[in-house]
Amino acid sequence: MDITKEYARKLDKEDTLKKYRTEFYIPSGTVYMDGNSLGLLSKRAESAVLSLLDSWKNSGIDGWMKGQHPWYYFAERLGGMCSPLIGAMDEEVIITGSTTSNLHQLIASFYKPHGSRTKILVDELNFPSDLYAVSSQLALHGYDPSEHMKIVRSQDGMLLEEVDIIQAMTEDVSLIVLPSVLYRSGQILNMKLLTEEAHKRDILIGFDLCHSIGAIPHAMDEWEVDFAFWCTYKHLNGGPGSVGGLYVNRKHFGVGPGLAGWFGSDKDKQFDLDIKMTPATQVGSYQIGTPHILSAAPLYGSLQIFQETGIARIRDKSWKLTEYMRCLIDELLSEYAFQNVSPLEQERRGGHLFLIHEEAARICKALKEKGVVPDFRSPNGIRLAPVALYNTFEEVWETVQFLKEIMEKEEYLKFENKREVIA
Ligand SMILES: *Cc1c(COP(=O)(O)O)cnc(C)c1O
Image (cartoon, rainbow, N blue to C red; front, top):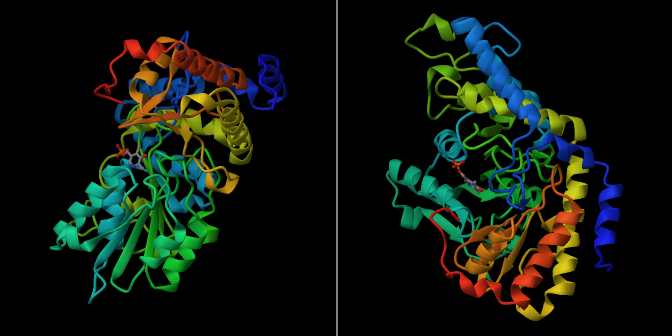
């Protein structure tokens, strides 16, 4: 392993995606390693927002049907731009809602408890919002979540074993909701295997793609996943609170929507304003109200970049970045008790690394003081996400050098080992 800065620069020179960095606004003086919490603004996303604002400015209500991006079809259009990223057909993907509200919609549509099949299977490492949603849906159906939300435990608190999940797919389970990539350890679950095993047992299965979309490829259709949902402000760089996404396998078209609203209507019938709804025949039926056009606008620009590069090239560079970082950490920080808990195998690791250290909170503060933006996860985790579209190998090198300096000189000691309100 070559630990010189020259080697990092050589890797940057060979990088075929390097020109995309100039399309992003990199906060000045920072090494941004937090793209899996909030991706950065690209110039294309910015001009898409301005263009949609213009359509409002110039067309008023006619913007729904006129102009470059008629708002009435915008959610479907963005869905089509997203579909290659998850291996789905255009009509199976829609940009709508948020991660959590989409999960509510999907449970409301696909959770059909019957007889002794009443449970929803989840895991204890998923992002808590998903578990809150599952719990409240169970309660709405009149079930006690403490009995009917079946939680797969992790053996080490960081990773999940697929065999444990499969073992939990018992006859009382009706539906499964799991993450594609765990938000802490970065582990990729074997979605193909889990879907096969769920279907063998007549259980429907859906995945939360928040930490995988835009970072790794997916094959939702090929794996026959029943449904999926995600946010677009992490690896997809859609901006704070940008509109989320939802996938339903076409074999389920016509089911639900569990939560209905007029924007789930067949588009040609919607403005008949009939008191009986005629749902859209495709994934659009899972929309509820008027689409949030201005919060979806940046996606029109940012998804173009993904269309241009393709997800395979992004995954290739992302893997190289995290692997380079992992090797540098091994080489340079071995005496400082950092524990890398992210999987080592390519098919099991997503787009970030997760380091555990008992001083993690103040190490993150010391990093921030040096201009590196990491992500602290309570109680003792440092999450680092070098992103393919805008980070460089040299930045990875710098980040590890800074970490070494912070540890060597004990610079973290001047901070309190406590998290901020947002961490
Ligand atoms: C980021 C994230 C969320 C956030 O949910 P929102 O409804 O978009 O606020 C939910 N689940 C996972 C796994 C996440 O990573």
